[in-house]
Length: 391
Image (cartoon, rainbow, N blue to C red; front, side, top):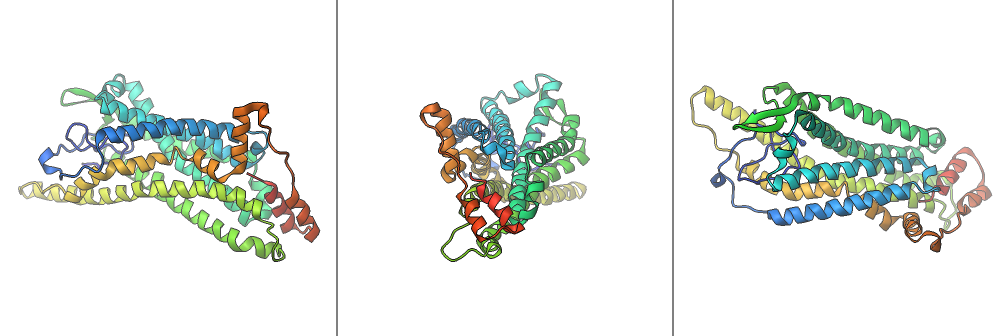
């Protein structure tokens, strides 16, 4: 059974199309160079240069996000827990993917992975776990903001540090359980006389599960959920806040709510935009590959010539590197988004870098005081607390 090219591994290092799925090293179709359309979207040296720039900027940015989210004021709020977890997970994704690509570019990937069965299984388990976990952490962050704004009366119960920590722990445990087959079925096996770390190709049921988990669990479902929660959140920010609070014309009571939530909404929205191209390509590739596999099987049964490899699938393989770079930006962009949209993050980073020479401005709660002048029913009180959640 042929597997579509749906990994981050390099698109063509030796004239063959890779067929690794989600960092799994699966024996692939050997396609002659003459079969591949004359299309080079991006050259290998350019791809590698951009890849390593993303790696450096991403790791640096994620470290700074972790530092900023650990600030004494920001860490009082639930979203700081999600930001720290994302910083760790995204850094591991960048390191594993970029390490694979750099080793593959130097033709040393299999020398590294196949050096021992234990390393093969550990590396595969780690890379697939963090790649699946990161999008779901963005989903949890979106849910946290959604509950805080759309259901303000429940915010004190659900948008807490404890709930955030428990939800991350549960999500991590679930993801690790779903990746157990990766460790079980990946091993070091000979291919053309050379030991390689890849799936035991005889495990057809696992390959089907791998396709489902990579395309559906790690891409499609998170994208749909992120989009849904953020559209609902955007609607709430634009209409529900002013209607529920009955704010007089000219008074902007929700400005600080918007400042906090919009910054995190941009993080979620950019995650969606960087995940979607890869997801669409994976769905298209899988559809074409399944059709080709059926045609190939039918041709073999009828003793007919092997069908021509789909031209569109070959073109998709050639466009993969660009979409892969866009996908990697998802794991490197959070710090720069927050720096651009959040005055609080800029102040924290400046204070961390400059020390006592750049003290943070004193905290104040003008929003809460203004709310009290208009009444203190339950909804208003909860929104006053949300307004004080300045980012």
